Amino acid sequence: MIKLLFVCHGNICRSPMAEFVMKDLVRKAGLSAQFQIDSAATSAEELGNPVYPPARRKLAEHGIHCAGKTARRITPQDYARYDLLIGMDERNLANMRRAFGGDPEGKLHLLLDYTDRPGSVADPWYTGDFDATWRDVEAGCRGLLARLRESGGI
Image (cartoon, rainbow, N blue to C red; front, top):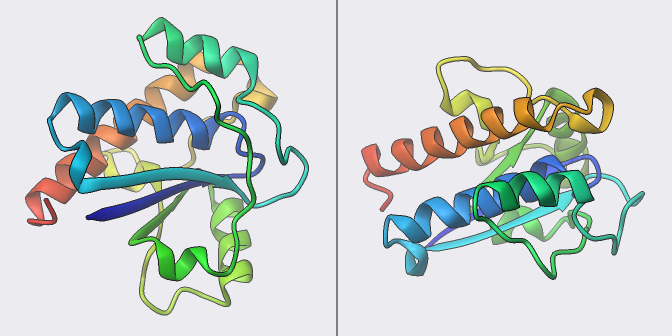
């Protein structure tokens, strides 16, 4: 089983979008039983809050639902629990390294590193552009799934 944790600052926009897009992709590929997929925050600001309404609406536009998801914060145990911990931007990676005491096993990555345009996933909390975030998240998740297939991970 491949265990993925998507991480952003508050776990109400980008990382839950990535969690549910990836769950949808693996479901459609008939691979759900081979994955455990979750998301978390690096901060405590939104703990217990549901997915931000515009992010929920953007997922719903694509037939993806995220009912019941609430924000949680990463824990030091998450590093051992997950195979890949995927941040949305460099700040997320820096905060994860601090929380996990580094990255000795090379598990920390950026989502867009799995695309032909590495960088940060657009943060709709500041931009208000959930379309751009959708495009980034979808491309990153598709690229990640393709990479896992190529590497023989699934």
